[in-house]
Image 1: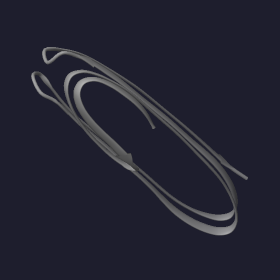
Image 2: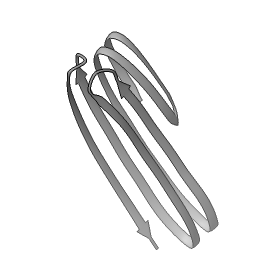
Image 3: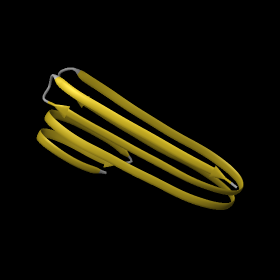
Image 4: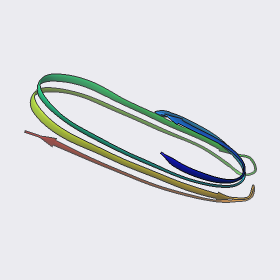
Length: 104
């Protein structure tokens, strides 16, 4: 997680991300998960992004990935979240999510 903020801004990232921004805020979140499992594997990937920009915008982004695999599996999960907000009235949100799963 990489964050740069201009103005009055608060942002935390602990798998669960909560940010409240006043003024101009710039944030880029980048996450890559890579896993190879042999046998029986059980995994839950949980990610919550919560953002409030006072003025015009309110956004909650919620992502849950659940996977159970038997045998040999190969998985790569790739997520990028990009958000820019200018002032309290104008705001630009861009989000790109990519996910790739391979099963042998």
